[in-house]
Length: 189
Image (cartoon, one colour):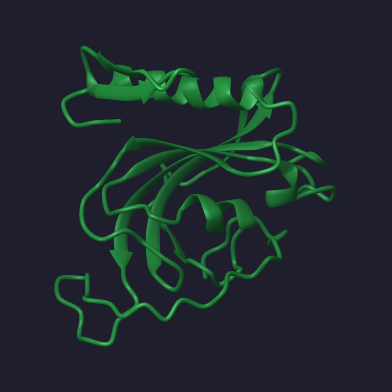
C-alpha cells in the first residue's frame, strides 16, 4: 500500500508491479482481497496474516506501547468473510490495549506490532492464535479463524521522557509478550 491510491507488489519471479486505484476505498478493498487470497492459498494457516491498508504516521508501535483501536471482527467462513462477531465502530469507546501485556488474543499482539497512528490493517488470525478449541460461547465457535480490520487512533509509546501531545520519545525496554490468549473477548486492559 502506497500513498495516492497505489499498491505495489512483486510476483513469483520477483518482478515489481504497481496498480493505481480510482479511490482509497478501492485500493483498500483490493488489499483485503489479496489478504483473503493469501489465506485461501495456504495449505495450513499457522501464523497471523497481516495486510496494511493505510500505513499511518509517526513511530511504529512495539511491545509495551499502548494503543487505542477501532476494530471490526468477522468469522472466516466459506473461504471469505462470515458474520461480524465483534466491533466497536458504533460505540463511544475505543479498545485500549498494551502490546505484550497478554490481555488480548495472541494474534492481536502479533498483528498490531509495527502499526502507527492512523494506520489500518487487515488481520487473518488462525484458531491457535485466537480463541482455539474453546472459542467464545455464543460468539465464536471452537477452532475459528478470525478476520479483523483494525485502525489505530492513538499510540502512547513506552517512555522515559514526558509525553508531548499524547506521544512520547521512547526507550525500548520491551517485555516478552505473553503466549496465553485471552478467552474473555477483546477486553480493555
